[in-house]
Image (cartoon, rainbow, N blue to C red; front, side, top):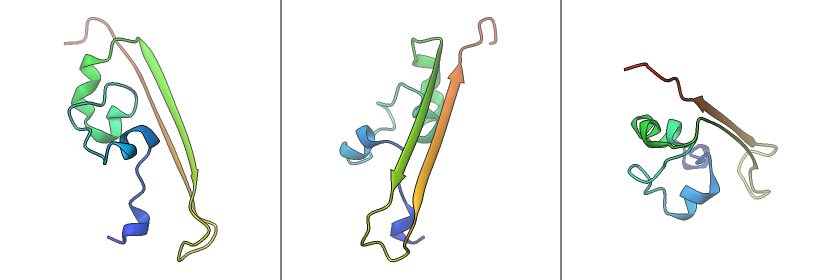
Length: 77
């Protein structure tokens, strides 16, 4: 896969060198580790991410959109 297509969906975990499999406990866990959603304490959450790719990219006018959301459902499992 081309390295310029591997854009992480959030700045927080990218700054942590994408070592977030056991740490992500928010809506971004859908991308990193969906099993961590069972540990989220909020009832619902949404994440909207927009990232324009740098001007020096090999392909101009690339933008990255990422949307994740979840809502806890009581009495399921």
